[in-house]
Each structure stands twice: as structure tokens, then as C-alpha cells.
Image 1 (spheres, rainbow, N blue to C red):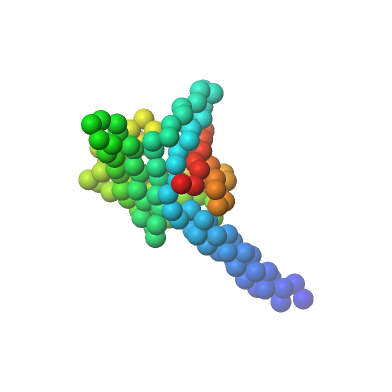
Image 2: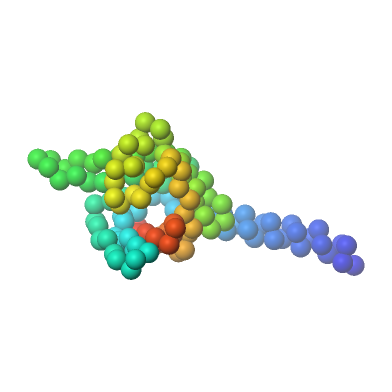
Length: 137
């Protein structure tokens, strides 16, 4: 009896977890505005000029820059979602932009975030005890 039930339970669990992954893929698509970053030392950085966009495994990070006209410094790359994590890799030609922005917190070409919350209006990511809070834009 147990031998018959084990393959069935494995299939059901696989479908449940792959369903969560698909939900996250669909929910994360679009543009997200970074609202604040909670640092490990309990300080907080607020912003309204940083945007993360996700579409078909390609992401764009954009920071609006105020000058004579508003322009954006951009960084592009690829991402994958696995269960409750998002793995992002910056395209080498954009690495300089990723490294210099204090809002991105990038130190290498790759960054792994835990997805703490993701729904139609809110996204909360965590990386190395730093929390990034977004709203859907």
C-alpha cells in the first residue's frame, strides 16, 4: 500500500511546488518601484527613483537621475525564479552601473534574493539581512 502511495505523493508535491513557481513568475512580471531598503544595522534608505522591471527572464534596474532633464541609469540582465528565490545576473557591459548604485547593493555579477512577499501590489526581497520593499508601478 505504501509503495503505491509514494509515487503518487511525489507527483502531487512536484505539481504543488511547480505551481508556486509559476505563480511567482506571473506575479513578478512588470515594473516595481523600490520604496525603501532596511539595512542590517536597523537604518533605512527611502527612495522613489529606483525601478526593477521583470519580463520573460530579463530584468532591468533603472535609477532616475535629476539634471536638466530626467534620465535613467540602467542595468540589464537575466533572472530565474526557483520556489521562493530569485537569482539575477547582470549583463557584463552593465556591471559598472550596478556596482556604483547605492540602491542596488551589487558587489558581483550575481545576486540571489529570497522572496519574502509577492502579490499583485507588493514585493519584498531579502539578501544578506537587507530587506528591499517595492510597490507595483
